[in-house]
Length: 288
Image (cartoon, rainbow, N blue to C red; front, side, top):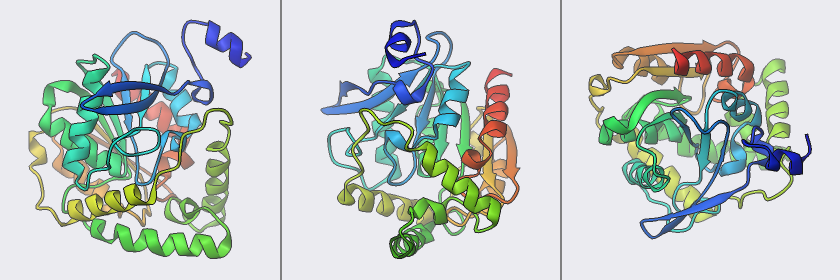
């Protein structure tokens, strides 16, 4: 189907061609893309450190779009969204809620990856009636083990990447085994599939603000996760270096209604490495 034909048909089914739109709220122009069927509870994607709209794996988005309206957005000060990036996860959560309400949505499912999973935890605690179900991938609870080391690891692997002319995500998201390296290359190639109307890269100032927020989250006192009554799917790779996998086990243990999936020989980007399995699991979870 050509781009033109797809634009003519009722719903966009491919993230590659989803136009970037904006909505104004709270003095901020939020950039977002949406696709998939209009009916049902929409799934809002909350993204990771340094990520813009183009950092979502198109295989994951397109897979979820077969059954759900999917909405990806840039938080305040990131990519094409205006404003200044906050230095706390709590403020990022408030901005995300502002964006969701600006679209006129009264109930959503959330998929939070990494930093996005931290933001999603705060959204569900601040606005429980807004969230139906929650998917937390490659993330951890406030005060979680090793989260305060994300800054150090990110700097280290960014330098490693520069020295080897690679993308830092090859080191940060994937294992160093043959399968892990291959999965990383494939993932990075998929992120380049969209050629038109790509998002702006994150500004350095915003990246540092996000690192600051994650660091603070790692130093926070644990939250009472037993108050989260929503069904939660927790997913990760078995050897996550960025947000140690122990944090996913901890989330699943502390959340009253949780389902845990851990992918073998996979790291932080486990849901991207095992995208077909993850999509099947996420769809079953959202529909049950």
